[in-house]
Length: 459
Ligand code: FCB
Image 1 (cartoon, rainbow, N blue to C red):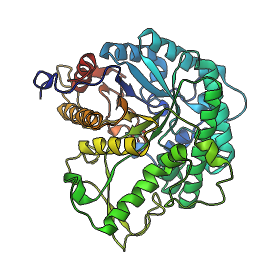
Image 2: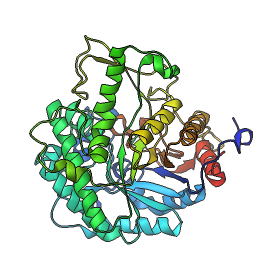
Image 3: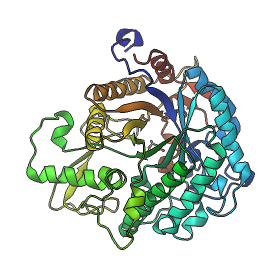
Image 4: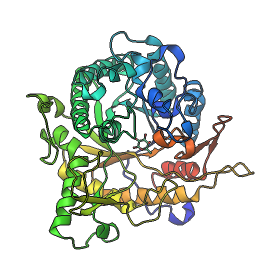
C-alpha cells in the first residue's frame, strides 16, 4: 500500500497528539553512570535463564549518551510528543532518601532538548525499574514502597515541573504485579499469586499518593497507563456480533474485571471489581487516595485477550481468580513474537472504555509490532508489515473516534528497537532500526510513513 492511495481518507481531529514512546531501562544503558543505583531489572537480567540470550540493558541503545542525536531524529520525523520514563534508581539510588542531582540532570537536559525541538515531553515516572534496595525490603508487596514512590514523584516534579505538563504515574501496573510477583516472568521474578494481588494494590496506592503529590505541586495533566486489552471469545475475534453462551459471557466479564477494571475501577470509581480477591492489605481510606481525579487513561494495546469458559482450566499464576477460564491466542496473522494482529480490538476497547469511564480522556500510549527487520544493502529497512500494522491500527483508532471515543492521541511503540524485557534484543519494535554493534540508527520505511502521517494529520 502506498500513502498516495490512502491519503486524505483518515483525518484526525485538530490537536491530535502524535508521538512515540520508549522506557528508560529499554534504551538508556549507562547503568553504572553518574551515581545510578541498581534496579530490579539489572538484577533480573543478570540472573542466568531469565532473559533470552542472556541480554541485559547495560548498553541498550546507549541513549544516555546519544540523547541529543535521538532527539534530532525525532525532530526530523516530526514527532509532536515523546513519552519516556525516568529511571527511579538514577534519582534515588537506594529508592529513598537523598536525591542524586546528576541523575536528575540527565532528564533536565533531555527535556530542554525536546522543548527546543518543539516536542512535548510526556514523562512516565515508573516503567518497571524499581530500585533494588526497595525490592530487598519487600518491593511492591510492601506498603511503604507506595509512599517512597510519591516522594520520588515529588522530587522529579520539583526539577522538571516548570517545563513538563504531561505526567504519567505508572506504566501497566498489571504487568508489574502479575508478571513481576505472580508468574515471575518479569523482574523481580517472584512467583506468588497472593503477593501479586498485594503488589497490585500497593502500585495503585502509589499511583494515588503520587497523583496527590503531583497535583499539589501544580502538575497540569496526569495519566495512568494500563495494559488494556479487549476481552473476547474466540468466536468474537472475527465476528463482533457472534452469539456467545452465558458461561462464555461470564468468562469475558471476569477477565475484563481481573485485568482492565482491576486498575481502572479503583482509580475512576473508587472501588475494586468483585472478581479481585482482596485481603487485609486494603486499609480504610486507601480507595479515597487511589481515586484522586486524573485527566487521562493511557492504553497500551497489542492484542486482545481471548477467553472461554472451561470447567477444567486451572487458575494461572498471572491470573489468580481466573480458574475455569481457558485463554487462547486470537485466530489472526501474527507478528514476529507470535502476537496476533487484531486492529478491530483497539476500536472496541477505546469505545468501551470511553463509555465506562466518560470522565477521562484516552490516549493510545503504546501500540506497535515486532518484525524481523534487516537493513538492505541500499541502507533501507523495508518493513512493509509494520507500515500495514500502523495503518490498520490508526484506522481502528480513527473508527473509535467516529464512534464517540474521547481519544486524544497516539504514541507508537517504539521510537527505537530496544531491550524487550524477557525477550531481549531479538524483538525489534522500532520505527527506527538500531544496530546494537555500532549503535547506528536507520529510519525504517514505517518511520517515514509515520512521519508523513503526522505531517498530514492522517493519511
Ligand atoms: C509493553 C511495555 C513496553 C514494551 C511493549 C512491547 O507492555 O510497556 O515497555 O515492552 O509492551
